[in-house]
Length: 296
Image 1 (cartoon, rainbow, N blue to C red):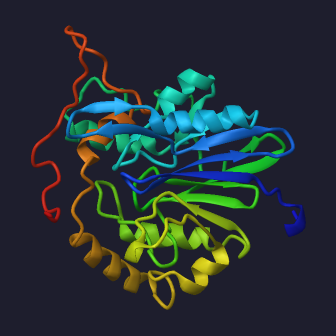
Image 2 (cartoon, rainbow, N blue to C red):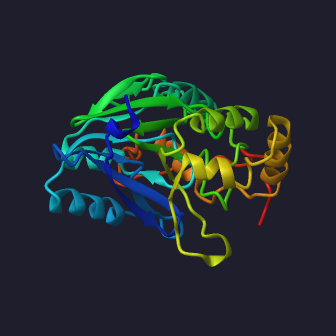
């Protein structure tokens, strides 16, 4: 399709400051159909409390702009926040979806949590997207790129002229995502990044995190061209250079504070554990499951 005919979706980003996450509503101006990408369910690890403040902001935006939600999409099973996909499905009736390789991640974490009853078949979602699979958002064409490296199941959603890359490429001054979680691989991440950077230079790139280096204002939109010219972990590097840089950096990073809390929720599509006999829900927290991680 000629560049001037590629759809330009409206993109609204919601910055969640506790985890530096960005959530998106991506809408078709012609039809008012939209998708929600990577919504956050609020969680306070100190008190164990959950809330829906972030997700309700998204719902208010959808309602206020007369949008209809076609899909609720996760780019991968997040390690730093709970997914609000299940909550938003209950509020909108829209199907939830993720990449098909989520089944590999479920098998991996099923062992870590010693969770034999977990169905590691992706059935917690309404749809599992295959690499290259196409779908639509209103009148706009969209497709999926399998983007492993940060996790086994990471995907990029390309909707019109916009690519939602989450934990692969960050803003140019922040570089790239870590690749040391269970199932992560820096070499795979490099190849996934280069597949994204093979998109047209004018493609808008929307990241899933911004940690505000040097205290600047949060930012989450760049272009493929900007990333190719300016990304601190890409420009002038070979694959081997990148792997060496990424592995050295990852060794210095502590694990996200919610990784063991969040994965048991997020490999179930954002569903919290079922209440026990006293009506309370409980998380399972394995000790010494992530040996070798830096302490802070």
